[in-house]
Length: 156
Image (cartoon, rainbow, N blue to C red; front, side, top):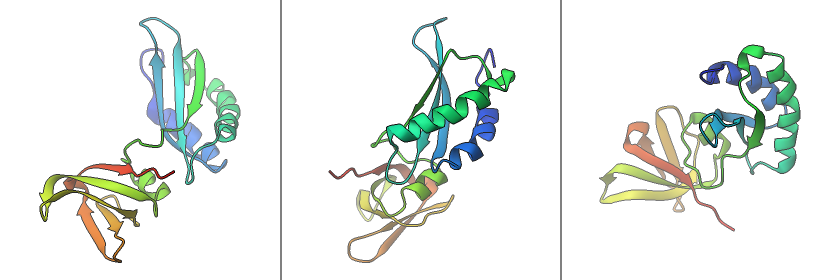
């Protein structure tokens, strides 16, 4: 991994162990603050209700020795575990499953009934469809190719 991140191999290695801790591995990335500078391997985790510092610590303690036991996956100086952020767009089927029932805004590429943004609670969705439960008890169904962005609505 000296040249590039073997993302698929890392995801395969870490997915089941991380899931056993009650969180989901959403992404892995390798970042560097400067060219030739130290490289950080970042594991991004999520779960329903949000990620705590304890979750990040547990994943770090579990992942570090697993990664170290596979020299072909080395190539970083530091390991970091973080949440994806409250307001990040939801992109994958796993994202939609984790955040099912939560309020979201769905933005469309093209207007539907004169409207490009809809809000509701995320209903069970699939690879091909995004479904919203509206306050009036109705549902809206969008095909994935109609949807430009799905974003959580954060309420405090």
